[in-house]
Length: 284
Image 1 (cartoon, rainbow, N blue to C red):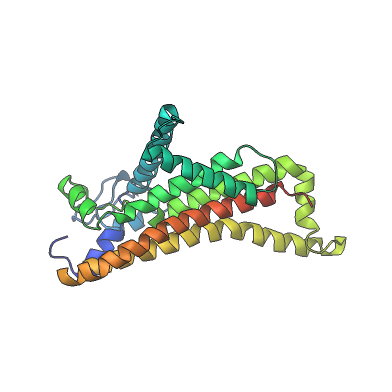
Image 2: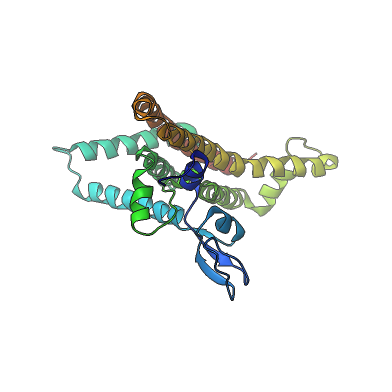
């Protein structure tokens, strides 16, 4: 990081720790040539790109799993130690989140499914915890991982489209599952074929229209979260390039504003998840 140009600094902070396969004869960033196809950690952004689709963003996977474990352990710990007499601050905070989610599900979800509440709670808290990693100053973790010999690290999973699309695809699969479970395969197909124009001659048009609308849901869900988080991360990095006095002037207001952004984006992801699953339960 020391001695990097601004462009190299930005690229370094936005490159994921990537594990993938490089082909035989590939010339690596350090000048060595591979004698055979090799699975390895990318040493540059170019290598990460050349690894293609079948590569893994190790930092995204690790931080996604870590925040998920934190959520499970924290809520389980609070649930086991919960007391109605003298609840602590952590118990009050957890109960507030749970009650808020329950009220939202009651007002938004129009079907009957006891799983929607837990799904909504999991989505909100998990996305919020992943977003919250943005509040760690941008140089702290890269400096720590560089000292450990790790070249690249991007610790915010929601700035990686692979993570946001993974979650969005999960919601999409639940939509399909509940649509078929509630309406039956025939009912779901009929809904796609005869909506919005209820006539056999318009079946082909309805199918095209409804399929595009159906596929647009996970795309919009993923890109909305990714776009907001990625843009916020870029601004944090740009602020870090400014002189120290300017960093304090700009970073604190942006940090306070971003606390609202990370909460709002988690809330939007949860609300849209509830809405999409409610639509899957509605029979026309």
